[in-house]
Image (tube, rainbow, N blue to C red; front, side, top):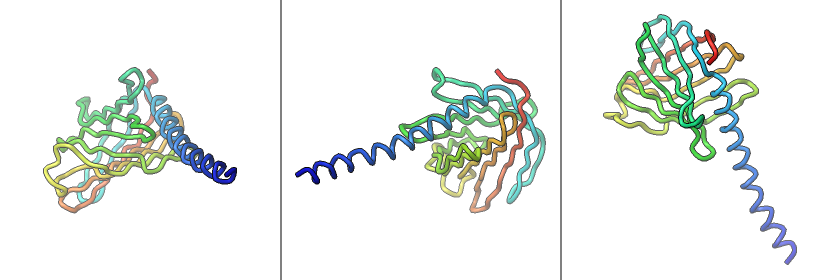
Length: 174
């Protein structure tokens, strides 16, 4: 009887411990994203099926009483795309309001804050005409230091892949 009770208690506690670790990882990652508040700028470059380059400004702000981080990408001072990062239970999620006029939703598949890594995988999208329509299907964020981040959007259109890399340096803290 004692062994059955002990095994039952252990089996009950172990999943809770794993869940708490996942929750803490996502919550800690969102806290790191909150630290990005302010203005950033730097070069961007498209590679793959699409090619382009230029300079981009990015702002990070909090909304929802600090429960979400809003990333606004601006080209030539005009907002072109917005991403909202937030928790969904124990998961770190992002919804990307794309220039392709759809809204891919992605979930963090890897969070390794010791290395500054947050990688997101495509979950689904709203306003996506078909799987072949242009859309973001992956995203990587590298927190290189407190004032330097690298964003990489993975984009697909008609089965052809492109990447947009944005190398950002902090301009102001807000």
